[in-house]
Structure formats: C-alpha cells, structure tokens
Image (tube, rainbow, N blue to C red; front, side, top):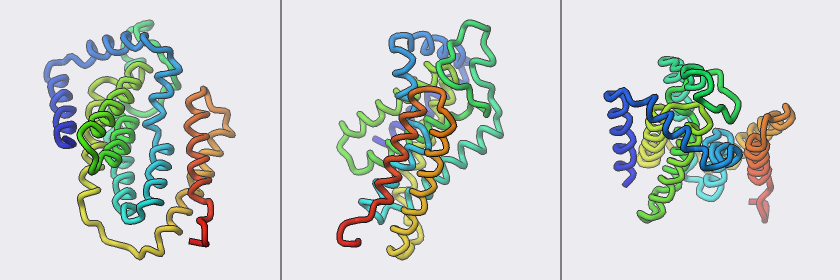
Length: 241
C-alpha cells in the first residue's frame, strides 16, 4: 500500500506536468479551500513543520531506540532533498505568479522556492514512519491526513499541486526506504545521549521561535508542542534508566 501511495502521487504529478494543468488545478483547490476558515488550514499545515515532525520522531525513538539510526537518516534525507530541489528549480510561489486578487494568502509567504513542498515531505515522512507495519485502514487514514496537509499548502496560497504531490511522494518513499535499510549500528548507550542532545536543540529552537513573536496561532501552537515534546525527551526516566 505504501508503494501504491508513492506511485499514485508520482503519476498524478506527471500527468499535471504533461497536461499543463498545474495552475488551473491550483485555482480550483485554492478557492475550494474557502469551505474552512483560514485558521483550520494553518493548523493542518503545521503537521508538516519540520521541528514538530522531528519532535514526534524523537518521541517514537525514545520508545523504540533501535529505530533512531533510520529516523535520523530519513530526516537528513528529507531536509536535504527539500533544500537542494528548491534551490535547483527555484519555482516561484503562486501568490507571486498569478494575477493580483486571485490568490488569498493565509500565512507568511516563504522566501524560498515552491518546488517541492517541504511541508508535504515532512508530513508524509512522519506518516510513512507511523504507517510501517500497520493495517491497511490505519495506513489509509495516514495517507488521507497527508493529503489534507498537502491541500492546506494550496489553500494557504503558497504551493502548486505539483509541489505537494512530489513532496508527498518523496517523504513517504524516504520513510519507507530508510526503515527497510540496514544502517550501521551504533552502541545503544549512545541513543539516550543523542536523544537528549537533539531535544536540547529543539528546546532552544522552539523557545527562540516563540520569543520572536510568531505571526499567528499555528506558529505558537506547533512551537509550543515542540517545546513540550523536547521537555519530555529531557525528562529523566524512572529508576535512573
């Protein structure tokens, strides 16, 4: 089922590219987003924020330490692919391309390229990790959640459909591939130390983001959740474990 999701997203992206319907589909989905208030799209979008996704993955690694090497590699590959592809293609955001008044910007306009969507990569990566070994209906629910995150980026006005489809395919494929690959093992004694170090980085980063006066409620919430997750990771275990 995981392969099917990646293949479906990639196929839809290819059809959009070949048909030239990227802008038309964006306008349809963007205006259809009026069915929900802007705050709901911003809250859905935060499920693709890298800091919150990393915090969730670290909490998973705290319970299943053997997954940490795979999760670290997945995050590194996900972030690297987003940075490199955005720089290579430098696709302008819809708000900057389409006629004035046709796009309602619901959040801060990012300053980097649109392709691919980093939120779609991050959200699909987390969902792909959580879907491993689950029943089909659980996987289907996670895929549906990824598609909602993708739609949120279109509704907000910062991504084209092609951006989010490719991002979702990349994120899920990275999660699926990294969890099935045998990475070089490191001593289990390293895991708690690495988790605490990463949690401290998240704590400082989310605290800094909150201190900078976030622009809206979604920024406050996802940074607050990241901060709380970091505190949980830093909390000493019982019996000194």
